[in-house]
Image (cartoon, rainbow, N blue to C red; front, side, top):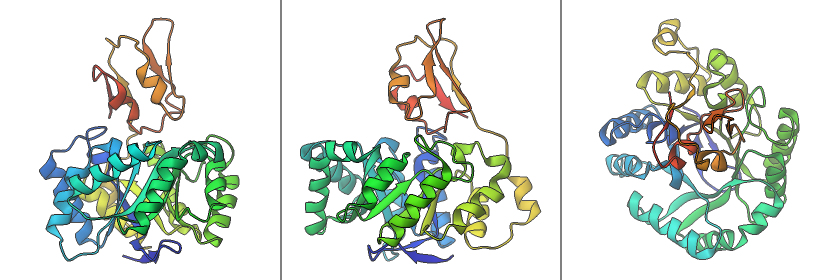
Length: 317
């Protein structure tokens, strides 16, 4: 496994970052033991970088990982939708308590859209900056699906890390093209920002061209790491080899299904609309039948809608 410095943070991360959204209740829903075993397996293959978020409900898996490797330098990045200082304090306290850790390596404002959005979360950001000065956080930053937010963060000296959506087809970039996002991220990296990507496989939509998509993501010179969701040891093996620039045996490829995942909405949906309100892609809508429907070509399978559904009618398969 190759490791790189995450911008100017002083944090050394594996090129492959384990995206824990996949193992948690919003997607695969692995048991605590199953999820922890998979995380440990990845760590044994050299992965030291693990991405999560308050909304993912995956802190318990990561706590078991940290306890299994007390002397290993495990890097945890998490995110919060907090707007106020009080909300961010609660989010940081929750992460530290549930991870059983004195500090969090990287803490991000979740899903920022522009300079205006970041300004609206300024109190939460300031709390993170103060926490960094106290040693409770090592680096602060944002996650985003938008070029405008990446550009704003690149121009802010107090931002250490940018976690942007980026993939070979530009799927999910909401305000421009892949090349425009690449230009902004190249400039951000030159300014010392640590860049680690999300959705390199387009939320599963690029699985039929997974080799090409992952190689493209890892080859970008501005990228320190790429976060990839995994739910089986075979997927870990494939992604570790790819991140290391090594060929993946055909036999291993055959053992991992390349079938497209999709969002399933139960036919007894009551049409409350709460899922559509939280969809970051605007992929969900209420149809003439009063039920929620999905534009599959726009869905990135993040699973946020499944969490919002009060009746558990939505699942990612």
